[in-house]
Image 1 (tube, rainbow, N blue to C red):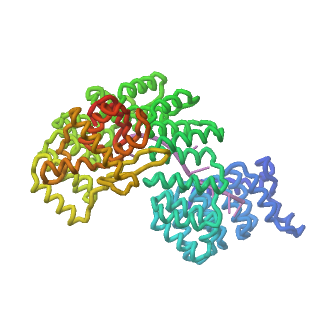
Image 2: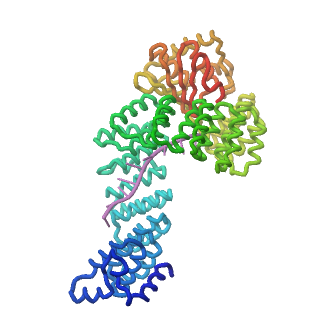
Image 3: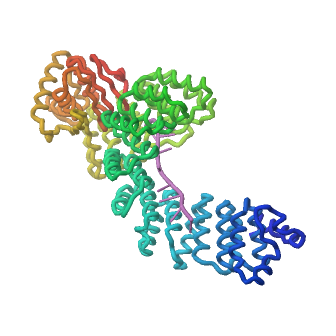
Length: 616
DNA sequence: TTAGGGTTAG
């Protein structure tokens, strides 16, 4: 391996008789007659070499000492050679370290460990794991410095298979309960999405620090279990650990995913109490949290008061306007961003296109899409998906279909899903079938796609086809995602599923729903049975609709809160069309404002209409 | 000789 070290070494050895180390660099003092001096005084030369190595200021300095070590025959002195290896690794001169490693005829586990760390430092995780596997093969001793490094390498490569093998090695060497090893394992499992493995280890740890708590809080939020993040955050505080800014960002993010305004307000008060300064990240996380919990004004207030903002802060605020149906505001903000000479990124455009889509601003969306290259952003599948959604919802199915045919980017299931959704809205069975075939090929295990297609057939009265889909789902062992609705009342969250009778106030809820429905029908509400996917009598269909979880939550909200009080409701799926109409009438008849967050966006029902303009 | 955790869309 003739690398630059060799070059430096040869050049140096040519001059070695002429130049003394001390004159080469002011920072170290080992001279070429150092060996003679030290042997005559019978003091170990290791300490002097090591202090010389540690005082190196650059790789050239290290190379010179390296040459000196070779010339004076000290390369087999492990403490010296290992220190040289270590300093090369510190300076990320991994090729030089490798050369030295090959030159060493005597190596110990430290030499190997340093190489593992060196490769990890330069981001070469492949070689990092390769060297580690040799350590295991040679049965060299393992320590709590090397294991966390290789565990982190697995995290970076998202390789949980190798990660598990290393966990096994740690177990066998009795290192699995070491604090550093265990913390690294928790992090690795968490980042690889193996939340239950992470949790099991985390619970078994003899002690936990703030970083490990933060990893777990973030991991729960990232795997769709933000409620558990909240529980963990409370547990952490009960153990007397005070969160820092990073931990706060993690819980704010979890709270945004939870969508619960009560929690959001409580958390924000707590942050004020801690007096944590808002950096860009925390400020942005707070914008996102307030917006996703339905308080757009609070989000904008934070945005306006932030001393420093980055492209993510702007994109978050633009996105917030988008899913609240305020596309004009989103576009205004985008213009402000451009005026301040800030460069948008690919996500800014996804947010903008989405905003247009939610508001039906087709022409504006097309213009933005066409302008992307001007900002150096090449449209990816996400941007195309927004466009399919935008054109499809607006009924321009032919244009959407043409765009799908001509696009050069690889199509994914979300793109086909958007197209299928548009076909459903505009009742185009033929195009829907085409989309469904592609979709079911890409994602045969997602029950949502089958339901959507079955919905389209049901709408068209094709009950035989509906039955076929149902059979196919049964054959493949797929079940519909259960729909749930949550509502806050008395500082508690109440959860309902379709036809739920488990709530303690169930009788009153059904009574309230019955009275409400009667009032709404007098006001003109007619149940839309197109949203029932079963081939049953109209009367039965009406009965099925009346039990939807969002209606139960609304009925409960009305009897549990004072008159005129705003209701906040969250649904895990998209709100059904019939419920949407029901809520509009309810907002008029009961004179209540109802904010519903569904899987797609916010709907603010007020005085008989919805902020989405029936466009969702 | 110990490191590591956090923000935007879909």
